[in-house]
Image (cartoon, rainbow, N blue to C red):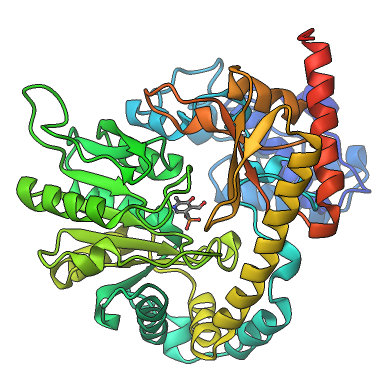
Amino acid sequence: MKSAGGRLLAGLELDRAASQPLHRQLYGQLRMQILTGALPSGTRLPSTRTLVAELGVSRITVVSAFEQLTAEGFLRSRAGDGTYVDTLWSEAAPQQPMPRPPLSARSAATSSRGTDLFSEAPYSWAPAETESFVASQIASSAFPATTWKRLLGRHAGRTDPLMIGYSDPHGYRALREAIADYVNDVRGLGCTAEQIVVTSGAQQAFNVLAVLLLDVGDMVLVEDPGHISGRLAFQSLGCPVQGVPVDDEGAVVPDGPAHEGGSPARLACLTPARQHPLGMTMSPARRAEWIAWAQRNGSWIVEDDCDSELRYRGKHLPTLFGLDLSRHVITVGSFSKVLSPSIRLGYCVLPEDLVEPFASASSVIGRPPPMVLQAALADFLSEGHLHAHLRRTRRLYAGRQDALLEAVGQQLAHRIEARPVDAGLHVVGRLREDIDDIVVARGLAAGGVYTYPLGEYRLTRRLPPALLIGFAGTDEAHMPYAVGRMAAAWDRWERSSRRY
Ligand SMILES: Cc1ncc(COP(=O)(O)O)c(C=O)c1O
């Protein structure tokens, strides 16, 4: 019969200053010794009296730890003969690292953003910085916190079944109605509330659409350059993507099948309202060509429209969804840029016959977003707060864009050329020198200045080097200072890389 002896006692270290109670510490340490094989099966533990004396703890501490370990099958007590390590866990204990299956081949697509700079998510980039050139950054100080808090409070205490139970997979009815009114008003979409399904942002909509519309191996057309996270949703499902070039009129419609001898792409994901990341609006002629393409090939179009409400000049053009009578188009929208990405609310506008299949797939993939948020947003929309917020932020962002362009003109004109954009939250700053924009962005990031390089958004096409410079996250008055920091970081990087 083995005895735990002094080895066990020497291995136990209880910390009286820790917030974890002593019996939980004792339990955890004994459990770990059994799982790692340090206390093999059949080992007899010291008596409770010995442990109490040696560890200087109360009897109840030792007894509760032993009782819990016995209930979980780690210890067994024999009447009149003490407590032993049970065979249940100790024999399964790994003595050395065991091989595990690899991650799925498809999972690689979810991390294929390309450069090491962007393996780090934007939230970990100096989160305390109030100024940022990150393209998707909104003005956090402009968030309507008082109204939002009041609306959340209105619903947070509700205990009716609608609020507390599993909610409708289509989304909260009042929110679907408010979204239908909103998109018909600001974008002329021409849909009913029944055609809306609420999602956790555009990203969930892309994931659900990928499951709903595509089989593994189906070809997907994406814009090159184009939105990265949307593309990854399709690729991570095992669908190859093919880039279509973008010109002044938007994404160019391919002539033939996606690849030689192959069948046409099953789906095209497009940003007609404001090409992401370059910013142009798709021309009416190009819109007609894409709809004809979808009808001719029997393919889907996903119309990604995440921020066309943030338009400073020029007119809204009719959506592909509104133009297509043959029901090949699905529109995806989001409140990430118009309100905040952290509320994780977006929506899909679907042809009637896709609504039920989409809602079913959506509830398997993620369940509907929290009801409190949906109800608060429904009120936010129906009481006119979003319209007021949009009016405010449009003015704010237009001012910030002007300030950015002015400061760039004064301090960085020798390095970049940036033109005003009609919509969105960033300008595209073309580099005057033909150097790798990813290397430049990495150099600036090393100096604490964060931008997105255009090269990150490309698939295969070589593009003139450029940086996406977000203007929404920096106060107008601070813009000259922030651009000055960028200019200084650029100079420092250039000197350190000896590029005089
Ligand atoms: C082109 C594009 N689509 C969609 C989104 C919104 O995604 P989500 O709603 O998942 O935040 C963004 C946000 O940056 C975007 O740039």
